[in-house]
Length: 262
Image (cartoon, rainbow, N blue to C red; front, side, top):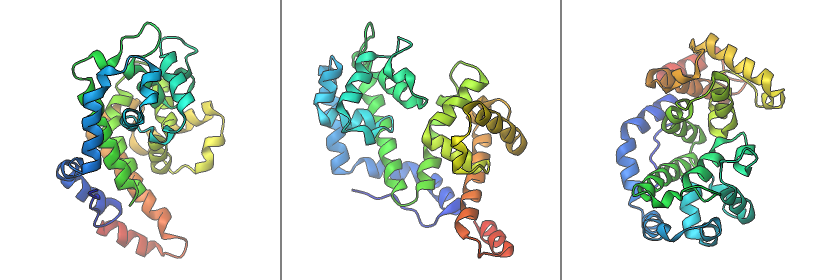
């Protein structure tokens, strides 16, 4: 399996990864194991007509979950089957109860709930799911070396979709806050401690909104779909991540020199 090349960490490593992303992803996608999984999915997903069918085929489920960054749930068969069979049309459907919108996106995409049209009936379905699976698999492989790179890649790939949906500013913030990779990105970029997640959710929203306006000049989360705005968020994320990794022993001058050299 091809391993993503990361010559350095922080901003300099991120800039290298951006420049070489297309070439590295193409090489990664040619890995034997990955090709075997995606080809199997393309050939067999059309035979899936129920949640039970999908969960019963681990190879199909691996690609299906991986496409939405939910690969860690591969062994939670009952949970996944319930989520798919519930669909997303009912307010009390299992997928709709989670703050992490990836579950809802996953269930809605496959369309195996009551009254839903199976996604596999769409001619572009297999290709779309495979492309998402390949991108996420590359991100996971990158994260095995440097998790900050995984989070930044995920944000760059999904942010436009996350904030481009209909809904209030508050609902878009809740979606960002509900997805662990995006939440981690913003908590770090906004200088918030990890324990911040224990605060009342409405208070969290207020802090996210106020600090975003103060640091990035962004009041409408839809603005994060702008590549320049998102690049500013990601750059700040890497800068703050580097600062926290230096430890208390590093002098201000040393920290500043490292950041400038990046």
